[in-house]
Image (tube, rainbow, N blue to C red; front, side, top):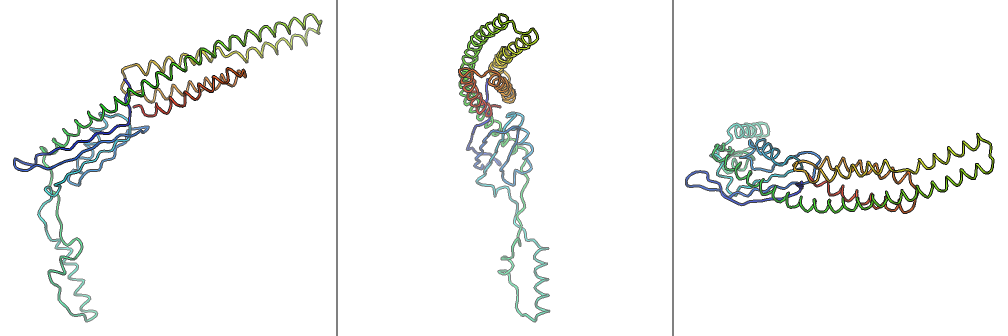
Length: 299
């Protein structure tokens, strides 16, 4: 099972404040790629005390990715208390006006009309939301998380199909490289053997002949990419096994495995200068890069 980190889910519903009152609520969750779990909550002030609870709920279910939770209440004024004058603030303004009048001889009288224009002259405290309303928000959020995960799984299946196709292409290419390498080594061995026989027939000095033989053998050894091919196949099988296992979180494992595959194909390309092998190595590198782009989306 492959689960994508990207997804979106939203819901419009109502929440009961009491037996007579309901409020309309819109909640959405959007998740994007991230190396770790991150959460951003855009919620009304009345719900600000629930932010850590929301984040914990999201993390327990979504594991990885940057998650955005947005809550909008159309009747959020229901959670505001009675409007009260800010007496200390008003008192300060009145005292300041009196000082101005005394120092500069300014006349005039403050009226209620003047006072209501003073910034923040009135306060509207937020009421606490009771546990019954909090639980409704959490229940809705849990249902929305399930919808989000369903979309992530659907996208994850598409990623799985694409990656399996790339694994098959990589298997075909590495098998072709293995065959081409075997043919190349066989040809070079024939040439090396002919060169050694030529040295023997020429009666070259033993020490010099031995040095040339060692040089020829070293050239063959440098061209031998059998070990790298074996390791590449092993990593590719591990990649396929990770894709097919039931673990929920596998994106990082897949990414690390792709890095190992990249190292092996780089070594293969460096050790073997054959044009056909080099061309197939480039094809493999392109497929690995495309696979890595896809893996970045996986939880």
